[in-house]
Length: 173
Image 1 (spheres, helix red, strand yellow):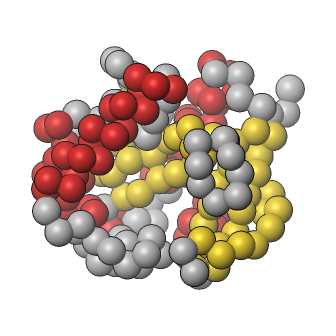
Image 2 (cartoon, helix red, strand yellow):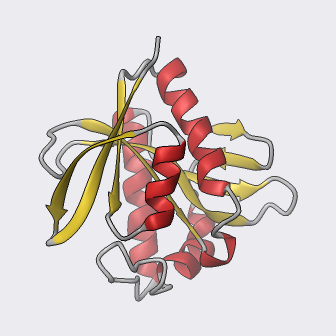
């Protein structure tokens, strides 16, 4: 898959094996995994497995998370985008919006800007009717991003014994 979307400040592109160091920097940070089950990655082998899984999603579903690259510096800041979920929570199949960034890039509007591009792609190019999102109830920043994007919280649930909010956004046309 050769994927490329530009926002005002960022490039969204497919995962590559050359992203391993940046993704390990992000996913080995305990604070990044605070609301993700508190299991930061311990080895780059785990990152290679994750990259392979995302690349397989591109093949299987034509969509998967995208690397967020700074347009000016070309630094990999994290990832953002859509994922087709086939077995997660209590929904059988749905499109999930997600984002994860290196801690040093939190609070700069990156998740919002890149998520807007992902939603536009999902609704206008893939013609998805509904996109969902999940955030731990205590993850104020992630909940704020989903609400700012127009998602509606429809329920609360436990995921791996952690309280989460479930959000939905319907295509408006």
